Image 1 (cartoon, rainbow over the protein chains, first blue to last red):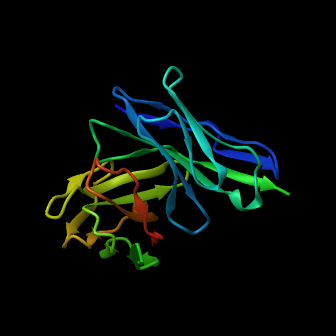
Image 2 (image 1 turned 180 degrees about the vertical axis):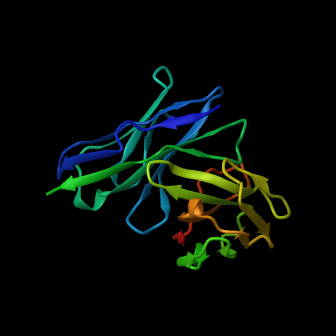
Length: 114
Length: 114
């Protein structure tokens, strides 16, 4: 069965510092992987996705993530945090055997300190 | 385009009461989903509809029923609400899988069951 773990339920960074949010997955088949962001009192929106093309995926607002099969990881990074990045971030996996469904991780809340 | 809309935004119920959460999308998507979001647990799939006329159970279907009324609308019904169903409910949609994987989310319904 597929699953997603996110290390750290809460991460704080200073404005301008590197953002690193960790995601590890388990899947018996090559996965599709996603990062979604949820701003306060809103629904989720897609940041970026990996669908077996390039392993380094670029998304909106200068976020990017690298798929590492050997480490079963899909960590999210951003070179310089902005105050507007404060939100909840969810990693998700969809396997090619259950393409109707996505499994979400528990989420990481990002705080940005001025 | 409005995207995915949900009604109501907030609801308070007493134990044993029933209610229906409404969801509609105007993107001509085939697939629609209902999730619940609880602190520390991410999003969990309640039911999904891969196409008009079909529905399937997700991870946590007990206590819920769904209706895919037409291609645009997908409703979630709580027949006899319980305090354990206090949660934030999100509806989402996507194009027919697996041609595209992005899900588009509504703004959510915050439900409290007393």
